[in-house]
Image (cartoon, rainbow, N blue to C red; front, side):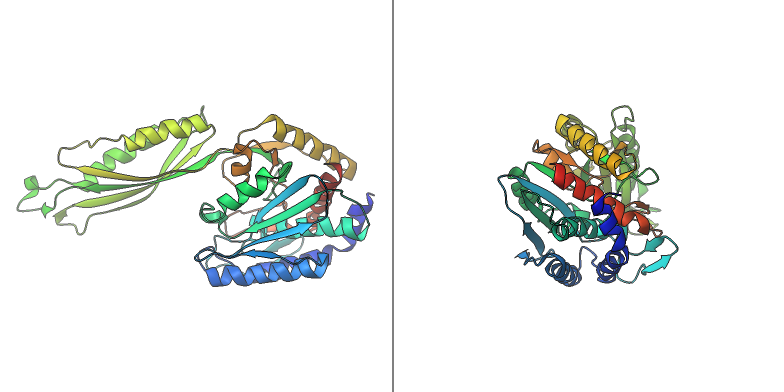
Length: 374
């Protein structure tokens, strides 16, 4: 057995205990206080296991970001993770059932942070020289678009040879991710004219009727062959049943596989014309996460990871993912990026979110193998 894998398997229970610590430190993105408390727990773990002090990058509204630096060398490798979650406080609880550990953010992506930490720790304890600078960047706002961390992520990536992202592996297959869809979010406000629905119906201009036309049109822009999907996920409108609706709002999600598609669809949405005379439209938003397109560099990284997995006794595949991650930003800069290096499990953003406990040391060993070979 590979000595790193053997070491990590011997410390599987400690890894799980560290993971429990982070999961119990619930960190919903929009609660700065809770996210920062979780950040303190992360700092404590890095201090305990790697004797590393953190660089805290303070934020006024979002949680503070954390940067850890390990090792020396002419080249830098960036390990990129986030510790915010989508879950409201108390919505999910931590529990262990057989080989599965459940809890808020356990898969997305606190287990990935623990695996990365222990991958470096294993190399340190076994005196394996990595001969490179490793920056572990832990951010606090990935789940809401990374608005406060994007500049930081891109700056670190620009100084790095490669980027490794311990987001969850693909569900059911355990595959790594060499491409992801880009994400756009749009808001459309519709203004019409109110009128009494019984006495003066003809004097009104219904924003809700206009909204119906817009929903059908926007959904018609979906093109599965191009990998482009639009979803009107939020609708609001009107005031009461006996008033012709004066206003309405739409919240639109866009997913794209190519940057050019984002530009095309954005132009269409911003160029929308009212279906009914007297209606006014106001559009906001745009593409906030470019697609992670499969590049030569990403492919080479996957092949290296596949070679590492073979040495550890298992095989890897690669997949394209519909969801985005911060790896989208680094790939768009032309930096080779490999995603999905985190935990094996299922239930991202779902109540059955869990990790497979016996895969924690295996995937940590995979990360360690990559760090050795790069």
